[in-house]
Amino acid sequence: MKKYLVMLVLGSLLFSTAGAYAQVLTGRQLDKAVNTAVKAKTKELKKGKWILTGTSLPLETALERHYKTLLGSDNEEIVANVGMCQSLNVCSSQAQNNALITYASSAGSYIRGRVTSDMFNNASAKVPEEFDKFYAAYERLISQEIKGDVLLSIAFEKPHKKGGGREYQAHYIVNADKAAEKRMRAYQLATQETNLAQQYAEKVSEFVKEGFK
Image 1 (tube, helix red, strand yellow):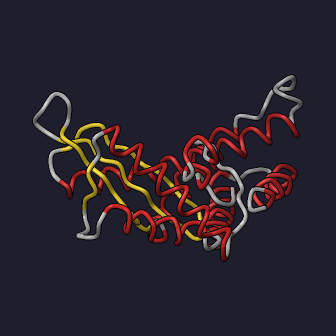
Image 2 (cartoon, helix red, strand yellow; image 1 turned 45 degrees about the vertical axis):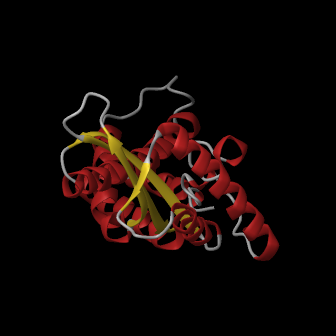
Image 3 (cartoon, one colour; image 1 turned 90 degrees about the vertical axis):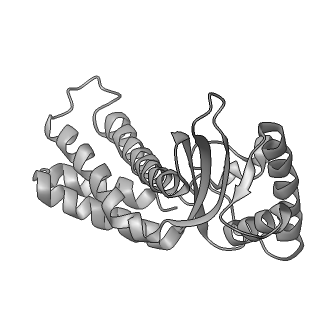
């Protein structure tokens, strides 16, 4: 889960929408990666007719700051899109909610996949019903726990193609270490809330910790 969505930064060269690990860059490597990211994102934004919002900085300066923060430290990126909103306040609120849901859903899917493949032989054995309650609680609690650490870094908007509103795209940054702490706390609370059997809880805990690597 480290560098969650960070691979999105370098466009088709280095990014994917899945949580992919990328090492922290420094010096010339960082400068080169940031420069590549800024060029790729600038091209994408102009093609999509997106406009930088929420800052008076020039586009390339704002992008450079964003990518230096993202790639120069052990951070994770969450990208959230809002298809239609009326005001920037509403756009921002919806985008943050979408970002939290996206992050929690990805973390939950990772655990669900490991449980299914490693503990129950790819669903050849019936997974106990208590796991469905655990997954739901885990994702909900992650959203609650991590909310204060998901920080808006840069955002873009454009008029909605049908008029009467706007589209909005926000890029959030969260520190990977803080995110790991919050996912572990969410796991602990979810096991208590759903009374996940101890024989399962210990193994699931291993999966949660493996996701930090």
